[in-house]
Image (tube, rainbow, N blue to C red):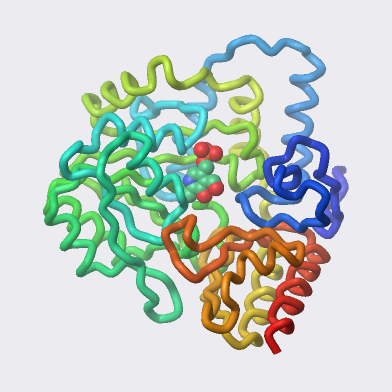
Length: 383
Ligand SMILES: Cc1ncc(COP(=O)(O)O)c(C=O)c1O
């Protein structure tokens, strides 16, 4: 019998070469980091056992993706998102961001560029510069207490002829799980303007609103090319290991995508392959314990933010990344002021989002309470 999970436990991550905790800009400061999207929780017992077994074996040569993982991924996509895919649609890659970059390099046009909704997870807009193609954007809007697309602006942008639309679902940083009506509108418009959809679904298994049901857009696409990316790394907190799968139904597109990766993509590590297999086959105990904890953290933060004048947050449907708007006339450069007071959150600008901060609340409750204390202190400095 394995011990239950205690997400209240604080594990010291400093001096572990952590991108989150050992950031060079913290040198000499007592900082609470809540930027990049990984969680301050230990992995499931099954994942630890998998990693222990690899260490015990002591062989770390090159690895292949076994048929067993391909079948596991196919079944996972069918079971979780009711999408029937073929095994040979799969292309295994070391991470979703390199996958997006390779796809944009290969398929986006130098004239009409890459289309995405903003604000958005920064690689979605930075990629345009990486592959030297124009960026086209349209805004997300608040509707009924959630972030969704401004569909009029979306259509106007599609009329400019982009070949590639980058879709983030669930949305980072908006926290939106796009519903069936929205998915059908997106597919309809992209089909009408013959624009390929590249869909990043890395947050699909992190519903914060219990009724939110992730819909895989690939299931609805018929007449246009598409690439859908899935990974277990965000859900099971193994982001440092990487590993992801691209589902590309069109054989010619698949061939071209693979050719764009040659020489750029390393092979997947044994750790990432075996951890993905474990994540998608182990019992749901860890995730079923994690989600209520994340939901409680969300609710604590949400009600705290609502009590503050000049701060606003919409309830998230998915992800553990709160997107908080601030009144810049009142609070000035709020992100910088929080940083000076010992809390590191990301700036809205990083997502092309303006007067917002993004706060990662996937941490023990005591750390979240400490963060809220710093926010309160920063606000009180104004009165
Ligand atoms: C929407 C989204 N896609 C991709 C990633 C990173 O994926 P990978 O580590 O597989 O490149 C993140 C990480 O935060 C993310 O939020």
